[in-house]
Length: 397
Ligand code: SAH
Image 1 (cartoon, rainbow, N blue to C red):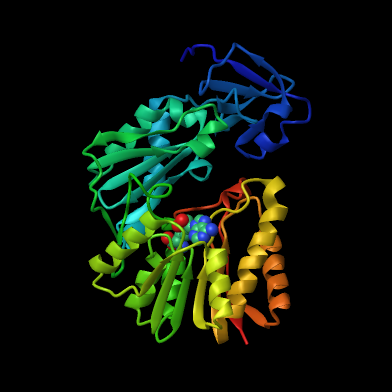
Image 2: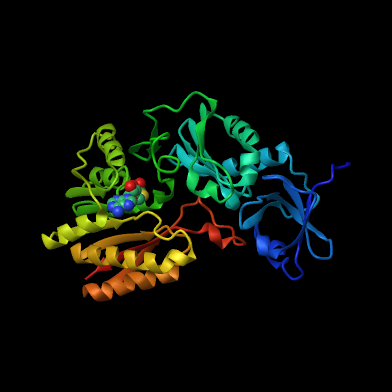
């Protein structure tokens, strides 16, 4: 088959190791030469310094990650059929999960599914997609068609928010790509629970699918216990705890709209979710500590506090502060579930920070379990960067 010539990115001598090991990022500093003037999102052939082809990637002129690899096989053709195949196979890998008592899962997880910059979350008959790289943006229509052709899908809606796209030179974009506008009363079903998903106004794609394993853990841990849900968002953990027989539930979040959805979650599940407190978590926890409150079960799931390596030190102090306060509020024999979702913070460092908090709090605590990404947020062995969610289940004396 004859091929239209593609632009060529030649790596510096000795800088091909990561691509040959199937790591999908080529940094600008590893590039010797760019031939053929590729535009944003264009497909480029990546070669080593001796001119040997290594594979195909998407060019991103504004990003430090200058190329994101589509394929490590120079024989592949990167066209609509290729992108469609990647999306369709990624979705098929979630079939077993979607047949196991939930209608909601992450269907496509970016590099982890061989489609850098494409994230797609399914909630019932609706798919919310985020396109966060130049290459993903260039294939928008093909991605939308592939997702819309999946069985049972009525709507494909885009929520490509600003933060990650800025580094790629892309503006924020949102809107319905295929089918009907998203249902304002859209509900995700997970086991016995119903979760209202605010597709257009919520965080990210509207719901934290990645905490599925945590919800299962809370169902086991909550019966008969007092539960404090810090950084509750729309109260998913609170629904599970209240529905599993918690003695009481207090949810804290700084977002009024998120707590409005939490209220609706109480209604759709026919549950009393207890108190929903709109407050800054740091201030609220100090207030509870000063009033000598105690809880048997505490969940601490802050937003990403470190966006990159430079912010890790400052974030560590915030994580320590939060965990110290939580440990002080934990009743004897209580359980603390604590997370970091900052990819820049390693699991090892996070554990050290929590250990420091325990030491300062005067509490002895043990790790009795860990909670990370569920199976629809996989981590390729060649791309450990896909791992961002690290959780500890701690039991305090
Ligand atoms: N555990 C939740 C997800 C938490 S996301 C779930 O499973 O659905 C993090 C939440 O922290 C967001 O809802 C955000 O509004 C909230 N948040 C961010 N900064 C905060 C602060 N300083 N105090 C309280 N909440 C905050």
